[in-house]
Image (tube, rainbow, N blue to C red; front, side, top):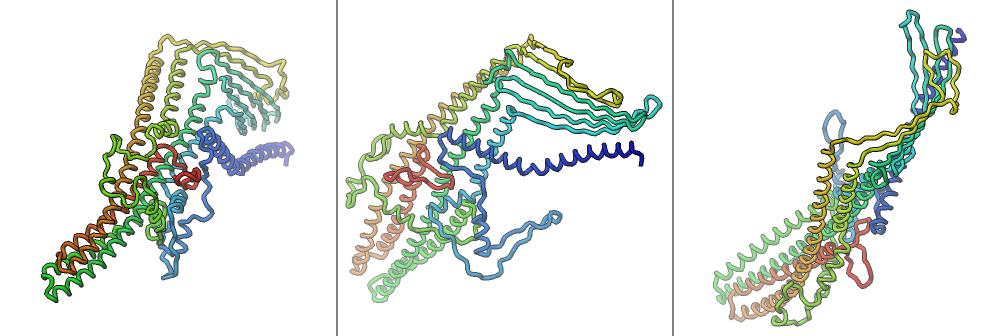
Amino acid sequence: MDGNVKGHLGFVTIILLVIGLGGLAGCANRQTEIDRADQRARTYIDRAQGIAGLSGSGYSLVPPEASLRAIIFADQQLPMAIVGEPTTYTLEVRQPPGNLPSHPLQLTLSRSLSVGAANSRDYQTNKEKVYRVALDLDLNHEEFRHGFRGLMSTLLSSDLSSGVAVDGITGTGSTTWTRKFEAGMELTAQIGIDLVKLLSSGRQSSLGVFADTSIRIPLLGGAGSDIVREDLTQAERNMVYALYDFERYKRLFVVDIAQAYFNVLQQLDRIRNSRENFLKLQVAARHARRLADAGRLPEIQVDQAQQDVLRARNDWLGASQSYGRLLDSFKMKIGLPPDCKVELAGDDLALLAREEIPGGEAGQDLDRLFVEPDGSGVRGGEPDDHALLVKALASRLDLRQAYGEVHDRARKLRIARDEFLPRIDLELSGSFGGHRTLASASSPRAKLRPERGDYAALLSFDWPFERRQEASLFRAAQLDLDQALRYAEESEDQVKLDVRNRLREVAASRETILIQQKSVDLALRRVASTTLFLQAGRLEMRDLLDARKDLLTARNGLTAARVELKIAELALARDVGTLQVNGNGEIIRQSAGEKTW
């Protein structure tokens, strides 16, 4: 084989090899770059948490090694849909092998919150919103980082314009460095090499080396870090706002899960009360039957007793059906399949019964119980309204964000004002060395000689005579600022309204507990006394049936009032801004003397 041909092939092989190695390097670095992007996102989130005062809240997107949902499916042998082949558009269903022993998942309120934080789809979506904002912030930081870009190309061409074929290969490789500074100055530098080889007409070759650099400096309009880095500033503030939103969501999530959890326990308590009422009415109906057989009770009263037994049985069945629906809904709310087996800890409901209610002294009579409430509807012993409002205004994250957006709109107004300034830019450029093409393949190799370079300085003025667009944008920015101020004021009033409403709910729930407790005590005495009077023949069966019905209503009402008080207290802590939730969705105990809010 001719030596020149071998040289040409070697030249082409080297160029293709370099290109191939560059492509492989890019593929190998893909995962490394993704890991770096994740690390930068976590850094931005940690930094924003410190700025927002939420450094203890915790944030992580790292999934557990084995999700609880997968463990439950395996342990309880639940049927599961499995995606089939993409071309069939079908789902396969895995059937459980049989009646294998399984263990129900034990859930307390605290465990339910942590399970929900790890498995709730809505919770994970809101967490990912924070991560997306962090990625957007990383892209905005990219504008002010050192930028490097490499370009390599190989051109095989044939020129027939002169009647004689001129064939050749041109290889070009260059590296470009760019940097934008926060003051507005932009630098660009490029260095590259041209390799030219003719495949005909003497087979000459030449090497070209070139370098270019340019600097652009805004002198008036568009100058200054507050103008240049506005997108980055807004992205940084959006990072803090995203954490505010997520923290607010966590507090809403806690109250929502707690309410659903206690609603299930409350319904379970209704089942127990309905069952007890049914059994007691059965006893009363049998007793009425014996009294009627002895001629001491009219038959119609026996029918009334039996009718109430049937009604109580139906109520018991309805309560059980409602319990199943509430439990399945609760399981889905915390991200578990509705057919999984769970058991809720009844101790949480018993703890509510042991909580002391201010103003609810034992043996309190009705005259002391029904005191005239003050204008706010808050009983004595409640936290001071003014102090809570001050704390809420200082703690509510949505209010911080509302006033933060006022500052954002004010910055946008300053930028809109800057648009009226003329654009005066100074541009400096320089280039030295030389490019090589097929036409210059016979030229000697180019060298980087700055003393023989080409340099230029340009001062440009851009001063439009019409500012119609700028004026419209400026007026729109003013209106946006006014709107943000109005929204912040409305948010402040809404915070006060939320706190005052929650205080009323807490006070009303405590009052209701005292009333229902007194109602239960009275109903118990009525049941006992009417039973004795019925046996003595001094009352009718309807009196006992009414007493038992009132007892059932009072017991259910007392449980409902206790649950309402717990949820109202959690909602009050949420709306004041003192409800602290960690990264696992669990409520943090703030101090030994405070409630676990």
